[in-house]
Length: 123
Image (cartoon, rainbow, N blue to C red; front, side, top):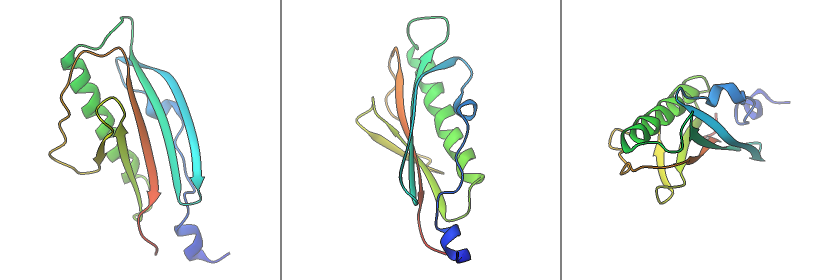
């Protein structure tokens, strides 16, 4: 197999524990390898030990999810990117290093996201 083909393939995923965020529990987790160049991981976060996230907790959780995406991308080959779709915020998408990402926080009983890992360009 040509080395270039390996570099243009999703060859790494992260473990369930890698998606954990302090103060939230995972209430749903699905991974779907759409092609050798694209993987989506859907995660539902619920508050630990209570019914809802306050608006402030929701905002903190959103920032933690964005930082997690940044961290994932930093561990991947240069041509593989990560982005997160926030399903409860009008499918708003965070792309790594995006500075102006501020969805309106509100009280929520669950935050549903989809992490997307994809080959952005061929090397």
